[in-house]
Length: 129
Image 1 (cartoon, rainbow, N blue to C red):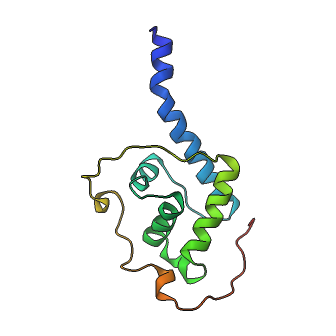
Image 2 (cartoon, rainbow, N blue to C red):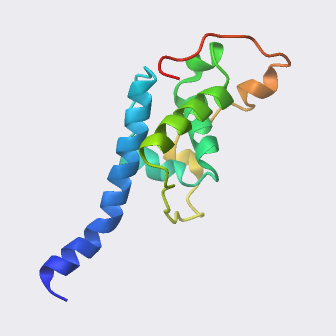
Image 3 (cartoon, rainbow, N blue to C red):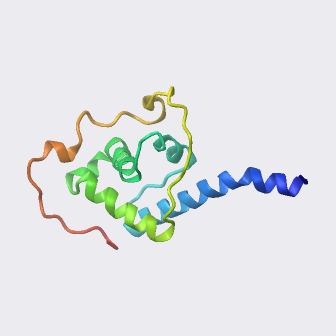
């Protein structure tokens, strides 16, 4: 294998991560959300099964103020739809299961916002949804 082939082979995972980040960050921007993910955030969320669950966990842990206006399910679905329109593939990363999630991301609230509410409130849609 020549050095060019080796470099291309080693950069494949990086290209996949960058494509995922671009898709997520574009989705956030299109929806008017003022946050961006980096590689560390993306890979830390990979410990959670399901993309929609990953997004919801991030919002609950890092932007709980958004949950006063929108449910985590609504936000994560809207983000995921925009992300999939740009890049439908899911990031495939193996994460050491011995690493506790608390080291990667601040623990989310004890219960999901949607579980605490026993009713649905009609709210305006996000920009671009």
